[in-house]
Image (cartoon, rainbow, N blue to C red):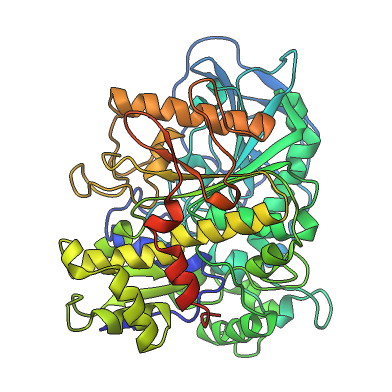
Length: 556
């Protein structure tokens, strides 16, 4: 049987992070430095990469001048502060304005990542002073301002960093690319009544507030980097994709972006109430030594103590309905048409759960469900009922769509159906909602089963799993197992980057080499596969979305 490790992840940005941490096990990109590093008057940085020779580019921002570097014909600016260090009395408060400076600020090195457990954090250490962003631009003074693509990294909102994603190739394709850090884990998403600015006021979702602050920085400054502040696309993968959906449904994010890209992000569309999130915050306060439940005590807790207790906080950390950033669940808002109606590009990968089943678990509609024994013919339906929280008769109906005889192992069948229910049919549901409300919607499925695997040596997996598409959009300088793309994969990557940039520029990803139909109610998506992308009209049928719609109606 399976054991549900975490509580209902209606705000399960964190469930993916927990599953990912186990899936990659000891495959650490870089050992975590002391996460309690204190801020200083100069920016905390990690080592920069080498660049081509030439004069260093300089840009005047609203806070002061920054000196960047040239990378493969583009200009890169790293470690730009978009908010003040959220330390001391600013811990668990909305982001505040970053201070200015005199002279030229060195912007050739990345800032340190936000505090997190070892796993996928970049080299150079961690610091609570981490609210920085990076800009890659193809031209500082173009005749026409370029579209802007702001990347929100994944990692379950408990891990990762903007510096893990090099935007050079997307910049060369024509976009000004911004990658950001934001507060993670308990520091970013813990809700507690002591944090509210007034009794009963909003608390929590500080990481989402950070993302909004970064978007406001873009509005004020990106024109100086050659970008068009009136043409901003927010994009993200996994928890970053779910963050994008949060901003689509957030009233306080209105006007900060004009398009949205969601990659493997439609996996948890119902958020927890603030009352439940704050109750969890009170329990967490006791765990870290603050039985008095005071904000003063919590703001004195060493960062490492918060990080060490993050595994106990993965149920209720992110995405509560705080009344400010989120006033209702993402799914509720999308279904009712109460959202920012911008064009959306939304998709998933063919075998999302394969990454997580490597670590003996699945991410199931907001649950983190771990294996306690292999799936067998005898416990197959019981595992389905447990993972999807359905009655035995519903589990039987779902099992009939995934006969064990059609799969090499029961584990494979189980992972496939949970992935369909959680990721693929989440995409189908979101695309149906947005299309119903008149929003231009484009769907995709990444289907290159030969894609390099991020977290294990080549050959470990031969499927398009969670995160597989990232190699095709970015250089990943800190990936544990880097692998070059072959000629066919490089052509697919070029096509994908062209589509992403075309969408950022116009709201339509169709290019001269690949046509992207609007999803509409016919459920058409583009299958990103070798040797070339093709239009597919059977996405919902292949993933049995009608069956899940009929049998998951009791999942709240």
